Image (spheres, helix red, strand yellow):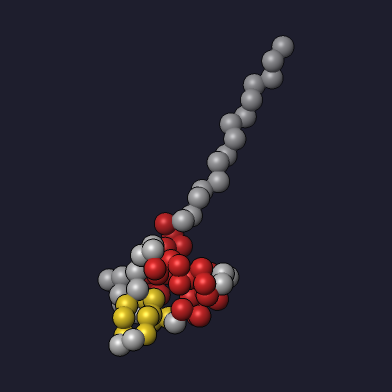
Length: 71
């Protein structure tokens, strides 16, 4: 599946899914930090691109090693 496959989201829908402001989403587009598509004068974000952006930002938890008791 290509990054442009699937449903195209509006800037507002993308912001809602990220639980952020529309301004933040527009900044992602302006800085080209997320893939987007021009549909005429409109900007749309492919669902696959949004999922890729989210996946790229995932930080895995660090599991602390057990400490040996000092005597």
